Length: 91
Image 1 (cartoon, helix red, strand yellow):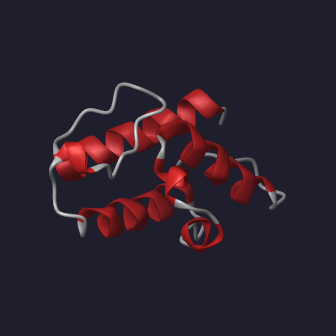
Image 2 (image 1 turned 90 degrees about the vertical axis):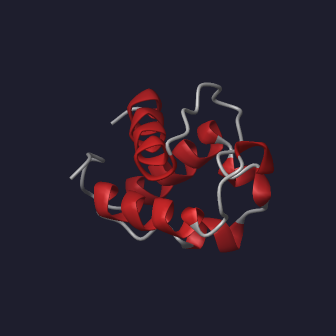
């Protein structure tokens, strides 16, 4: 999967869980301007781990809040998944 495909999966996941459409690739998907409970971030991460078949929670311990920007999160997921010999694909 390329970056735009990963961003598409993230946007669809955020919409499914929160009902919020993320349009801008620089948008912080857990930004307070979205006005949903922060606990939804856990559900989003859980769902993304299921979709990509990799544990991605370490992304958030190794980075600051900017990793929640759509484009940066997509890059981080690609980096984690590229460390394996399998090609990144949604499950």
